[in-house]
Image 1 (cartoon, one colour):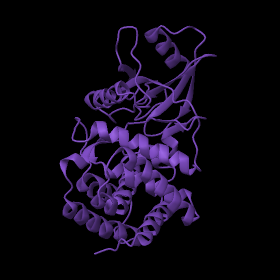
Image 2 (cartoon, one colour):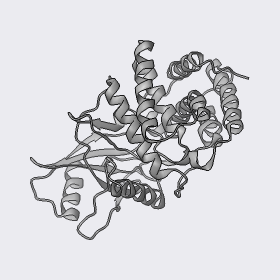
Image 3 (cartoon, one colour):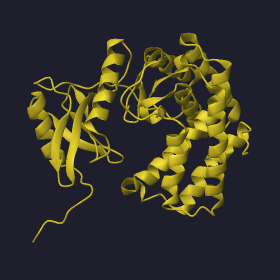
Image 4 (cartoon, helix red, strand yellow):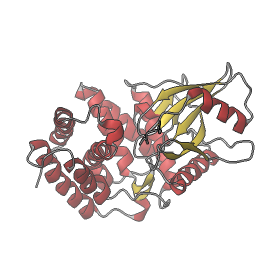
Amino acid sequence: MTTFPVIASTLSEKDLGNFIIEKYNLNSNFECKLFRTGVNHTYFISDSNTKYVVRVYCHNWRSKTEITEELKLLKTLKSNNLSVSFPISDKNDELIHEVNAPEGIRYVVLFSFANGEKKRFMTNENCFAVGSLIAKIHNITAGNKIERVNYDSEILLRKSYNYLKQFFTEDLNAMKFLKEIGEKISKSFQETNLKDSQKGIVHLDIWYDNFSINAENEITIFDFDNCGNGLLVLDVGYFCKQLFFIEQDKNQYELKVKSFLEGYREVRELSDKEIDLIPEAGASIFIFYLGLQAQRFDWSNIFLTENYLKMFVGRIIDWCDYYKIEKD
């Protein structure tokens, strides 16, 4: 019987573990376990003393150049003593490996493990520390570019809407809202006209699931898979928007945002124009991630339904109402 072609596969934990052990000269006590499938697949490989993260990029998701740029950024941040999960070189000083999966070539990278815990409900002190670390990263990335996506209105808003059109009719109220608010935010971005020093390389996915906090309130950020070029305030707006949905008590939300922004501004200036753009920045990235779920329907099909669209867009509407972002 002929083996049927596939569009996605999950690599064997055991065989991936043996592959990493051989490439990195690890001892035979290391054990590899699948942690999460998704846009990419994540494994942990560890023994009793040491733990690493193995990312297996999905086929045709990132080019080798894009991955190389991500890893160069992480090495730059690490060389500046910033607390990020960084790539580990193998015994031949290589960072990126190729495996021939059933669907085609997939890239594999080993990363350091971010010690600490994920905290959905953060303290004011936690938020201050996150803001400070993001600002330190932005001080390094401001004015720089990498060979990756440019996060402008076309990518964040228009393309995202077009991906969604493949699955949902434009007559839906949720789709009408996305189109109208997208036009409003695009106009705001254009009119704000921030300086080059307020643009640079952004993470674009900084929320509690992508950083660890240790007992000393030290933050380690990881998962730079969506890094690219754009307004630095995008990272600020996205973190604020995540806080908004975690903190049902908006008085607590305001206190934590205040701490977060104080931590950021203690390290890096945040202009009044950037502050004013935080609501639009946060909304634009949520629209982008909704589009990403449509783009990667192979991963998101289990939940990307009309009801999910209404729920997700409802969150964006709540945010826009809170900050009085009105459609044109």
